Length: 254
Image 1 (cartoon, rainbow, N blue to C red):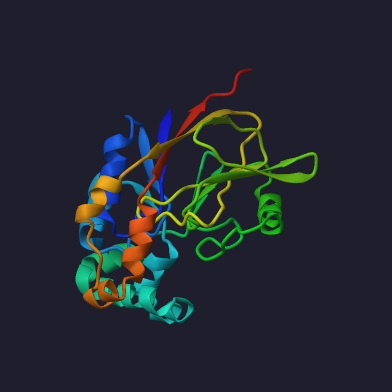
Image 2: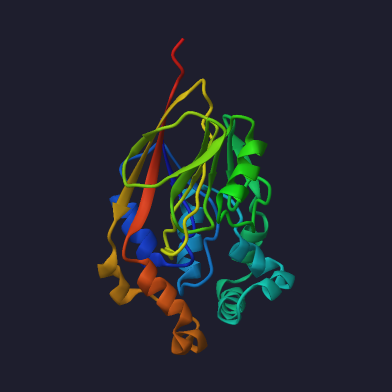
């Protein structure tokens, strides 16, 4: 079974369109949150995800659209985009965001936006944080987004390991895998995780998708933020290499 795992679309229709065009045929697609935020096409992106019927989790930007108290944790420009998004997408789409789950488990694979111990907000920036989360997994796989840079944290001989390259990985637990961002890659960060169940065989290919050509039409909004340039800067320098991963799970051999 082949499963595509996407995350952090961030209202970037051009980025989403490019990734979908490049994605091979799969049996299922999962979206690990932050469909909105930063970008200027929240309506189009939400409608696309809804129409495709993907299992989708709530991210911090999604939650901020329905819980204004969270905006005090956002920088000014990001908060401005959230407020604009709320006005832009209408009540039905806000209700869809409000109903998104914080986590799901599929065949002992934990799906979250941020981390196992904090499903929406925690960033995994170092091995100490990675280890604390790995210890919670009890041999399960965890897939998450949030950080915008892919990578795999695991444990080997009591030490935390971290790996990232465009390649196919064979995983043996405990490990945690982090998805890249469809809409805004934060190239200065390095986080992602996954924990693989020892009794199953898993192949994880990472594929890099250059979408610089899409930037010419990318919408950056709202106008007040466009003029300031911060969110446009995030999109411009994050769109150089988008990644989509396809998780191929095979039954365990007896």
